[in-house]
Image (cartoon, rainbow, N blue to C red; front, top):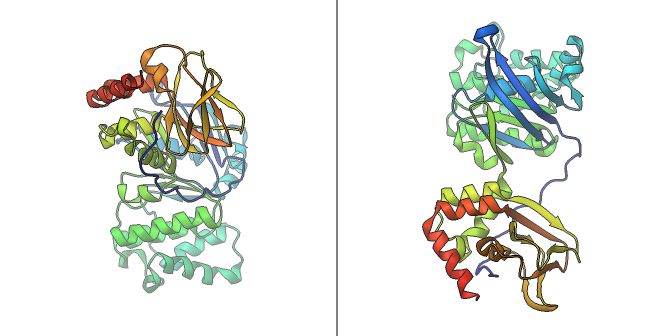
Length: 376
């Protein structure tokens, strides 16, 4: 067992969130074309997005991000699998009912699709007329959101008098003006400069905090990842990683302070963090038991544990400490029992992923064996 020498700051407490997911995707496959030209573009994708979450979806071009986004937005029909949006399963809805679901979604596309004959405010007003805004509140609300996006001096300008970035911000205002419960954005900041991007991201983040809206954003713009709650990565039609960023960053901070993991590069550290899952234990609960096979490595996020061997306490561990690595290295049964002395949050790494971390870095592997043999 080992304790870290420095204790990183805890991230802000998570917001309390409604229990029902805003989006549930289960086993979704999708195909383009027919007959011999039929081509599968999505493969068994599963994801849940909670209200008040900002999810950033990345991946190479052609990975299936936009296809998945349009399926969630009820702009394409679900072919295989299930998608539930705002509590309603899309495949069970009539065309009229699907229109109702779309009214609770704010869409931002790569192309702004503004009406050239209407001013910036009038484009935003059209969305309010289709939504639930009261007529007497429309002007105030439309002007307010355009000002938030730095367009207060362009309210009555038509699209041809606006720059590409300004037109995109009008489209974003149009998507957000009705305070939708779900926002689907496809490369919303691609045409924006740094300051405009900051304003857009702040507004999107505010919708998750103030209105508990869920946001799914497809992007290659790494300037906005800092604001995300989750990072989902797609490759070749599959979700290959889904990381809660606050947890991943926290794990990296813990691991970086431990001699055992210091030899890993930032990329390798991140790879390890992405494979760790969060697990909670009640006070008095046995986490691992002496004599059991060793299948997992544990990192304590919060709380404290006692390490007991032959009925004698041999260590007391707390936040930032780790345990369970000895059995993984030796292949022998657990040599101690670990008992939660208070409610404990842990991050857990399975045996195969732990072995992959060893294989990825010879310095890490050598350091790990030195730590192990120093204890015997």
